[in-house]
Image 1: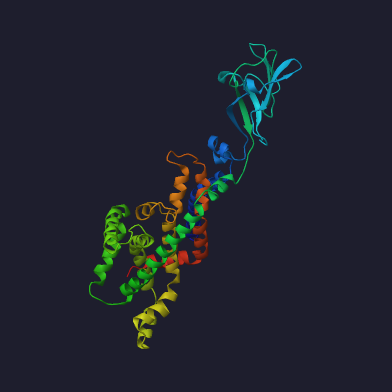
Image 2 (image 1 turned 90 degrees about the vertical axis):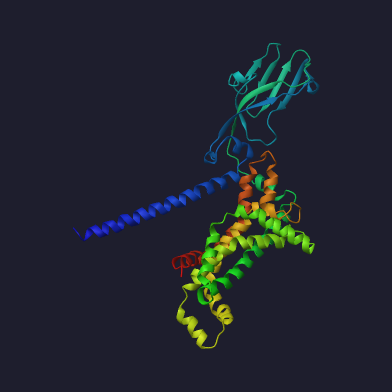
Length: 386
């Protein structure tokens, strides 16, 4: 009996761990799935129902307006107004209708309604109507009819087309790449050199300087934006160059990303075999040759891990781009461009769903191309700190 207790404990522990893992995956996957479904739904349905009802037929109360007196035709001694409340090719259907908001369920499609003036109104299930009167119509505006319309599930790529065909979206995509690629490579290069120095080189104040670098991890980004911008403006005045430029935002992202990069890479490089470094020194290799021929090839997992972090951060950044870049066509990034598509009052908010997936295409490619290094490099860089 005592031998089975550890087995049961291990089994329950694995079951608990797996259940927790499934729960965490569901927390992240379900909202993403909902966002994907919403991005291909018709915008009219997206407004009135949630993504979980995407496969259900929805009902919505709407109102239509008939034609005016100028649209009437005379037929067999009577005056007729004809038309449809639905657009051509619509798959909506009428369930009930009425001439007042309070009685929109009073009549069924195909039923003829006699109004107080003796005219007869008939509304069909497909939204077409016929209004017949023994005397000529005189109203300048059409009569309002309230109805309940059923809308079957509709999936479309119109939201994606609207975003992709908007003016300037292609240029903003190129601008974002222009920001993200150098802002990822530059801090990696600098941090790799610094991490090697902290891990394998002896110099005065090494530990203290490393503590200062780690302490910079807790400095809020927002606190340093304005001082950095003022510094860039001052440099721009001295050298007569615009402060809001690509080199400025590259340096800004480099400064914000260096503390984490140095910390991760230093911890990873510090776990490499000491005998390997000493053997290279005995053979006469300098620090530069050790770094370029040994450390860099062995540090690919850690470099890839930080590259994913940094690229995702820069690609999705809005705040730093607004501060260090202008809104001109040759500088505006995708996050800022997509925000402009919504308007100042949040109009066309349904395109946010398609915009989100368009903006994550490149980060997904980067992640899946480097994901085999991601976990290995991240874990190795966080287990050993010295």
